[in-house]
Length: 317
Image (cartoon, rainbow, N blue to C red; front, side, top):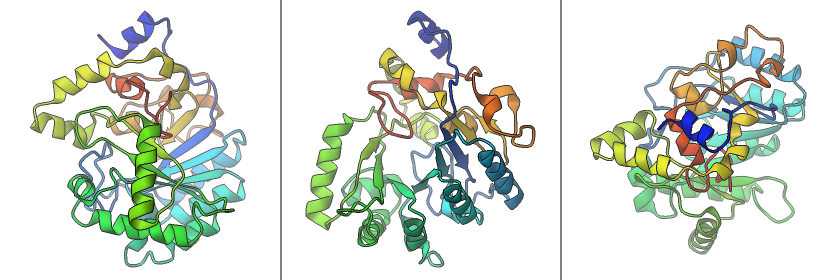
């Protein structure tokens, strides 16, 4: 059983991008952490990083594509890229909603003391990884001491106005399961998170986004080590939910890699599955040529359609 045949069996003739509302920019694989579930395989020793020339070209294409509403900047730790602030400032100048996929600990790194204030000044929405509300579970997945630093970073963001009464500064958290399982229901887990973080640390946040772990790179290696790769693959396939297909993020998103290549999503990018027409930013004058193109599929797509569905914006149903 393939993902393409599963779609056909449920009456879908593949997937096509009907619009381009979100531009997701992966500025590289350099990160100050090396999380166990990371599908990017990012870490401190990676060197892939978007150049100034590439960043400026992306901004030029963005200006030529006014229908794009959201610029979603990711990595690695995107803030480590020297062009991060220019991408944020110019996207905001173009009146785009900007999302920073933040690991929180970067806000407390030496040399980044003004980063949180910069994000506040640009009205950037922060989507921050926090796989649990307990130190034991977070440190097991993301490294020793990460939970404490994450809590301090969240408290800093609250002090700056994020998710405070009357503020339009938004801070969302991301949950990834710690093992070979689907995420629990998003709404119930969000209430649990809010209760614990508010009572224990005085922290406020907006939404909790539950995201299914993709069997790509580091998480795939983990599944092999624990002997669960086949079980997890079967779980994703058996949990296919046709109601999620209409809401898949790839249908209104394009992903740009650190070197300027175009992909249908960040997951395809990490698997080196080229997107529409194998195009790069150097071959187009706007992002419009990617609209009405067929989306490249793979077996990892079962991860986005399993259970309640999964996207960079959380569950789909």
